[in-house]
Image 1 (cartoon, rainbow, N blue to C red):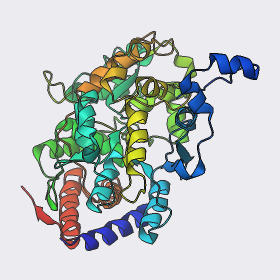
Image 2: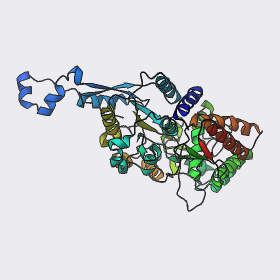
Image 3: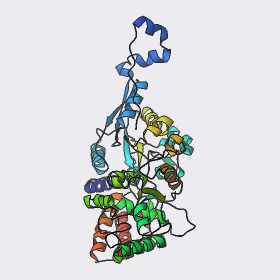
Image 4: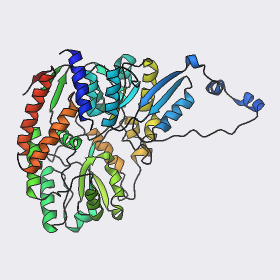
Length: 455
């Protein structure tokens, strides 16, 4: 495959589809004579004005809430490397701006936030710096293994993992207990619980189907499916495996049964349903704790559980959400950019601060922060006094590391959305939708010059 072909096609597809906390206190000024006596050489250096010709400015794009606080901490302690933060928009909005900059070869940021599912598109364009050349593998063991697998390809490392969304299930215990329904631990139990709850009260549902593409691929991930396996420009595409088809069959039957709420996730009606208890559970990413704001009346009556399994003896999970921090190959200051990216994602205080639910609220991916009692052992009155992070940390350790994204996730997502519309309209089954996904992805990949194989 010619790299130039892939570069422009992937860019065009992304363009078409594009539809925490430490603040350094201010020191009280002392007389000049006293300061001269008390300041250490390091403090004197920090206060000295760095000559303009030796100062390096690094442009950093991220939509993480309040991350400018971390930038401020860095800038105050590294006067020779100043980070200029810009929020270029979340998700597709940022990718549109980034793709435009890459095409024009101007105003390309030095460092950029990229979600896991979109990282391969930039790897295949050869626009990301290979961090392995800057010692990235020296910190590999500091991260949850599956997150490192997500940023690695071949012998290269193309980003540092920053956060994730290991899947868990949020449940309203009060509603389940009222109707004598137990929290399901397997998907068979999930289907039975949905039937029992809806039969007990036709106005109440165990859950709903989430149309979001990331959610569905998280469910495929948890099933052990491997829709894509990448090896350079070779790609294996498989949407017809038993692991994919059991997911499609299960959720197709659930939607047909009438035991799922017809309300779509993230709508105002869904917020209301959570608030009045007519939807009892939600399988989602660990970041979903924000639903506490939708159901304040259920404080002390909700808990977080591990995901239902396909077999009772399984302990496998998927991921829904999360981002990486990559350094662009176009940077004129790779050493300095890598230094900041490494600090941002490995410094123990920084990674802890980024979990602050009132600020960035990120789910940590370093083993040190996952095991830090300041994060791990916090209990929440809303979640029935549960130390919810202990459940989430266990869920993170269960995520299957063998899951690849394609270099054309935007095309995959749009195709899935179109097919799901057909499924919901009754014009194709979910299993047929998966076969159609495979056919269309194979054709698209071949058009882009990839060598494609199917099982």
